[in-house]
Image (cartoon, rainbow, N blue to C red; front, side, top):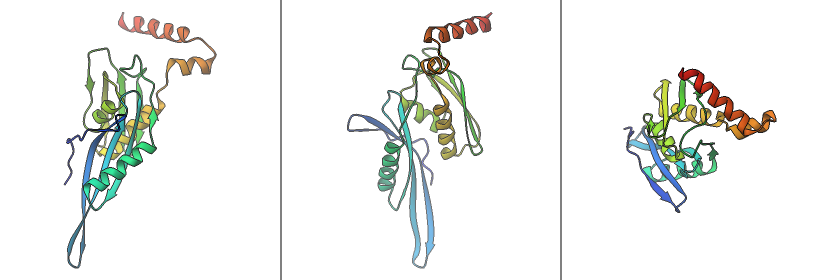
Length: 183
């Protein structure tokens, strides 16, 4: 009994928003009948550039969600955002058979992504992005592939520091290449 698409939003102490991405029910057949267990996949973020995900298993749904939320809090990742609304550059993420392509978008585009990817971007605080999932539709692999891509994302500030240049030099190259593509 998968309950995808039912986002569960909750403010945790005013700091984080968590979204329930997927619940999986499994049954173990025992002498007296069936014993049900639940696995929950939760994405948690502060909508300011920090996001994490967690996977929890328990006999009851609320307990599985609590475990997943606790795990998500322990594994938060900071993602650099351009103007606080989109990614700095196009990036690909891989995990198992899952592959995701994440592209920055102009203001007003919105979040063009499906399922688990949308939950991640909403929790992250991204307002404009175009994302495509290629390969598996397994929510666990899609989430891990998205996090792989987001951790590969860098900011011009980090690139400038690494190359020993100024941020304006790095950004001027971005503008020059954008002009070349538009012509």
